[in-house]
Length: 472
Image 1 (cartoon, helix red, strand yellow):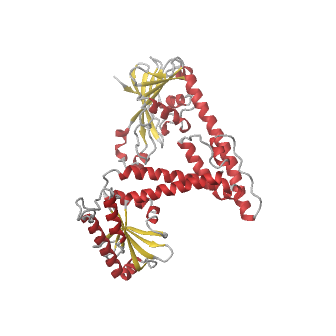
Image 2: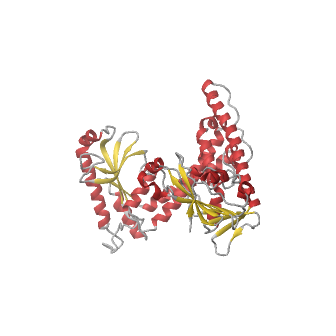
Image 3: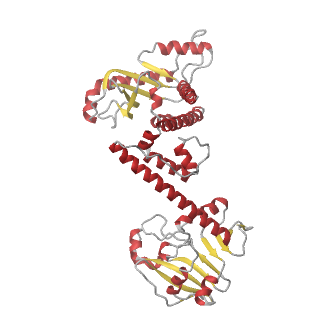
């Protein structure tokens, strides 16, 4: 039967309880402080119910197992495993406690804390931080979790690094663990040195710019990040997510100094980013256009990419509001008439209404009215009338809407209506009928989804051609 040793090592941070599992083997439990329970929304009076196993020290079989636990009060997952998949880390070498206590396991909390001080480099030694690997070495755990379904890591002098037959234990040779730990240290030190150089140049250039002095070249060590900054993004090397974040942070914080010292490279980088972003947008548009998506999906897409609406007009527009009420008390309030987008001419403030349907909306009736003549579908006619009614309501109530919403820089001189609907019809007769109809629809401009896609592709081709001309 397990028995508890008299250990009473309670601290303001937490308490350790040592219990004998069997001779020369003890389990160590962590009991959080009342303060941490309160921070986590738990009843401090139930403190005894919230103990968790933190260690298993087996002197008989010669291993030391850590159960990494989230012991930071007030955070999600309090008293839960620290890692997503790995539940325990075992050191299969009893020399840890042999050196301190002979061949017996510790029996008091004080002895356990002394033993924790003997843990190898790379391990958290303060039990109140939940043990496990120090933050700088969490990537070792991440790698194991991505490479396997294992829930336990075993580190030992005698094992070869690999996965056991049951896919439960990931063995790491001690020498391999040390290589990974030291390599993490080396990468961190290089990154810190680079950060010091970049910060030094960035701050100097900021104040030099302010006082009209000569800028200092931004010089960083060789490497993917250094090449990207110094060469304006010419490197084709793929960057890891952490490196991408570092690059974005450095460029963002040093935009002004880079613009002064390397304006051409910065402009080139901006052009590359815009072109890649546009190409990704076109790919997403192509994937969406063939799916039977509801109107609200397309409304969300145009809301995220409002510049596409600009291409439907021949003049610059600014989005005022999406899902605007044009027949109620406020643009954002409940109203009897809702338009998908209310935009305005950025120069004249004249308003325009956008109605967004879907690419699958039928725009012509299947059966010809006469030979070679096709009439507009009920969906198309109804959508036009819907837009015209919204226009009427907006013009009638524009003064009240401006007053209620405090948006005084919108006007309804000649409200422009635009309807994005369907796809360009197939066949010469159907195309002719469609063009005849929409060219005579003077109050509502009709644009198809595939026409907007083609405009995006033309813009991409233009930017790519301009880039090629600039670099030649």
